[in-house]
Image (cartoon, rainbow, N blue to C red):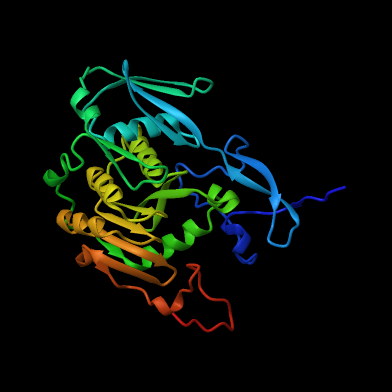
Length: 313
């Protein structure tokens, strides 16, 4: 008889058990790692030859229609298909801020979502011009990649206190998530000051941010005073989407690409990467940052160090 040892493949496997996972009460949308449709148990072997069973995310195709026209098929965990569809169309400039959505239809069996609008538009030219981006699972941007980008002015009065950044890092790291349960997932969190509001996950960071854009549109949430935290790389695609959403501050625990930095500076987007615990690097929009917290008091997990432990930060 073979004994299968349960093993968590996500970051939770490496996290100290002294940290209690709890979702902030402020979250309007939060990850649902216990949803059985989002993960599947898979058996395998570990480095010692033992049989293990881990949870892995389930990605599914989702074909998006705008009215009668097929737009794209995306790979997604399919937990918020309505938000993903609307956010994708917004960030591709196929929906305008003043468009009236008359209906959203989702068929789980056919894996199709249809967004219907009062305004009919022909997208032949936009669909013909494609840009393959660096998004996970190879993202696609239609039309002019920088359409509307240069005309957007981000709020010059927006600020980011370092105390908010450290508090957000801790709150997000300790929120139960699909990433902690199974790994292989990106997350994006819409925040206001040091308060997380909307936490979306997906196999691609571009999907996660599109879900947030769609949720904001469908629920009338404005971008003023908001910032966005992502686990993904700060690429040109991510910068363009955040600027189109008119969010002035973008934070990631990951790194940068050169074009992402150039575009952030062009748009005066505050761009912060490598944000882990007490450390971060800001490459654009640094005038918005207010240094009001002592980083030595924060350890690499975004938590105050335990009694008797000296921080080297």
